[in-house]
Length: 372
Image (cartoon, rainbow, N blue to C red; front, side):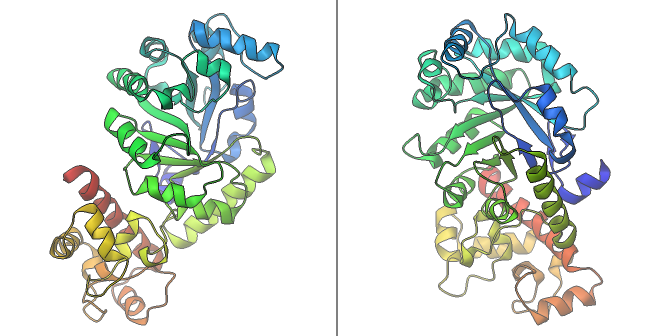
């Protein structure tokens, strides 16, 4: 797994994610056997959705009576145990997409499986029967209940994901901040028809790991998600072997060539907050200035922070670049003779350069969301 970590530098639940392509849950379909059959080309698999208490299990039975696919069982713990046994020895990071109406329902599952899996709170399902049971999208409409579930799971010391549908609440940026403050680790977003602009808004609002979902079946579409804030992409109905293999191969090749698989676009080209790593000195009227104002950082703060952040790294070098340091240089895909001469002079590659810029972006995210 060291090669996969070196390539993507992705860890979830203290496990290496071999590729940033995930399986999204589909009730009645995505079980252990389904995930095992696709394990070669995905890094994370969210099994489910699984109903885990009496109200949601009864809702599942009503949905089955109407002809919908659902997982039906008498004991959720017993059923989930059987599914996880099918994936023992797999290199997949496993998540359980759970539909419940109380914190106690979720903590019962967490007590059974501990830190073996990610616990994904399903705040996504919009079937009336499930919402009447107090689960799925009902939780977005009653965020205090969603907060309580997240906090209960975090008190059990486990990794928590929340699956949402974009556009349900008035402002997804406010929701993202709220989920982060409640303790969520991952936000899994069905983008519906909103596309990457919605994803960028969420990325600029919280430091959560983001999984982008909905019709991401081509490399171009996947790159749109990655360059605007996604850490992973997930597939559901179109998660066939050919599509998954194509996405996995394409992003692997890109990572091996470029060094930073989900590098953002430059800020002046519509990139998200991470793109501050590519911005130059704040000396002209450009998108950098409103971004600094938004995050509450003065021009001097930004300059001092960036200079300190690259101290003792190769990005400190570059006296012949525009602003005397690679800290202020642009993305490797943008032509720049002075940047490239500095990289060559100090004996590293453009791929190395992008990895150093990735480290700087991580420091920027820490500064914006954690240190202040």
